[in-house]
Length: 87
Image 1 (cartoon, rainbow, N blue to C red):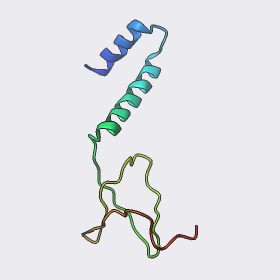
Image 2 (cartoon, helix red, strand yellow; image 1 turned 30 degrees about the vertical axis):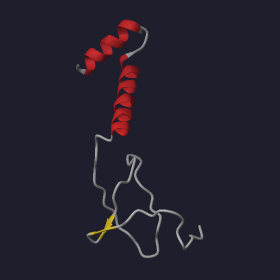
Image 3 (cartoon, rainbow, N blue to C red; image 1 turned 30 degrees about the horizontal axis):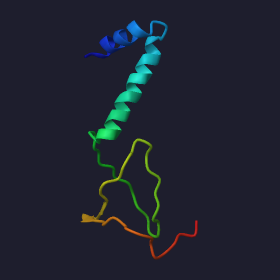
Image 4 (tube, helix red, strand yellow; image 1 turned 45 degrees about the vertical axis):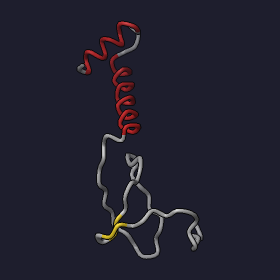
């Protein structure tokens, strides 16, 4: 089903809702679907600095599944780190 067909189907039940609002709802629905099904995967790379453990990630990153550094896979931390950050 194409987007215009979906818009027309929604407008049959809700004739007072405009196309723009329906498009926003459809976009929200596809984002939620992709988040729940994990159907979109991507690779992100960013520069690291010494003595930094926490990095801000982009908003579109929903889950981190693997981390590697210089070609080595970093194991997932289970439990509490021995060294605590001051900030």
